[in-house]
Amino acid sequence: MSSLFRLTIFTFALVTVIPSVAWAQLSDSPWIASSDIRIPADTNDQITIGPLGCPVLIVNRDVWHIKSKKVVQTLPADAEIGEYRCLSANGKYFAAYEGRNREEGKDVAVWDLVTGEKVATLPGRQRIFFPVLKIMYNRYLLAAPYSGESLYVWDIEQNKLTREFRVSAPRIEEGKLTVSPDGQWVALVEGDMVSILNLAEGKYAGKLFPPIDDPTSNFPRPLGANRIKDIEFSPDGHEIAALYDQLSKQRLVVWDDKGQVQIDVHLNLDYFRLNEHSLSWLPDKRGWIVDGNVIQRDSQLVTTEFQRPRFDYDEIGVLDSYFVLGRLGKEADSITMIGIPWEEVDRSLEAMKTPDNCIVGPNVQFSLVVYMRGQTGEGIEKARQKIGDQIVEKLKEYKMSYAPDQNITVRFNPEPATKEDPYGRIQLAILVEGSDTPIWEHTLSSSEAFTFLKALDTGEVTEASVSSLLSRINQIQMPYFIPKTADYLPLPLVVQ
Image 1: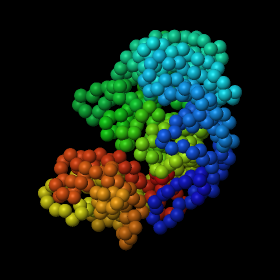
Image 2: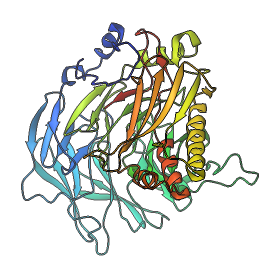
Image 3: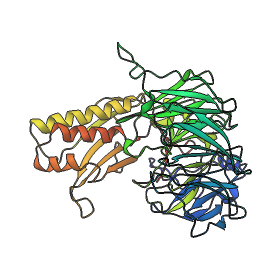
Image 4: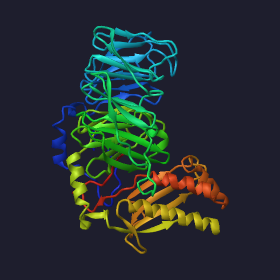
């Protein structure tokens, strides 16, 4: 299968083939010719990816032109490039703070990537560092200090300060500020609220209406903006999305241009990796990418899952409605491009509403087997029940239900120890009657389920070890549609 997709999909008795119509639609994208790009980059490399459609990216000091698939500029070896940096949308300018993480008093330098020269410098200020940098209109640098006192707008071409905007935020970090594509509006987390600033007029315009912390509570209260991990304007500038972190759960909240909540999606993701680069908009109101999970707007379901190295915190770049760019895949050692066959995804979402199309899908009933390595006892049985209940609740999210003696079985199986996994590993799998070969499986390694597997070996499973495991199970993206034929795509698509 072409590197365009690099999809690893577990399906029953069939090999998934992307229909020719999807290829035709993807071929309309101007990025199709560079879809085989491969840029060496591991977790130790410094990667800078620009806004939607940015034609370049930077790995360490090398500037890569995406469509030509080659290095077009290399920044000088003596250039100080810190952790805080950004690219302009047209790929011409690159801004970087010249100090280390949280180092105060350093300048912000702006480089012209066409000439390779430093063209502007925002002077450092005593006891201040700039963790948030945004380039607007491909000309103006917005720099926000951690101290949260002011926003500075620097004219790159004139190399001078054009505006200083006083704000009330106690501190400003990346992920707490976003600028509209036209450069007129700023959304800024200030304490428990998100304020909207009219940057052009230099004044506050209002606040976003907060979502409810727990909609099922008899005493609802606002969800504080201090829980926001990342916030982004939509490509058309008419909406704002924010990713809230509620410990083991997340919320994707979208506001309209009047500050009212329009969408509130509850997620269960691997929360330890969520950061200020976790959220991206897809153009044409397709949806969002949250830490590699592509969420389709209408269904609010994860339709594509880009698995990534466990400790990879880099941003995924969006090129257009179809193509994304980043370190994609569990063992990724390079930056590659992936195409999303949206028309086939939409067609499959519609097909899963018909039960005759589904091996796994809405209204399908499944049996459940929870193995515990032959261990017995009251504590083991309580753990078995809790694990089974968690799996059943998770599949209820996709309108599937448990019943004994069904053709489809979900199996939880702690496997024996190996050299790679000294306490064994846990396999969660879906099987069809008559076959012991899973049509889908997910593995939790020894390190991911260490507390539970170690306790299981002793036969003394504690509530804490079970609770930790249930949290991990809740974060697994299980399939909600496996079709009977190759006419449709299994969902979500998984890029391993």
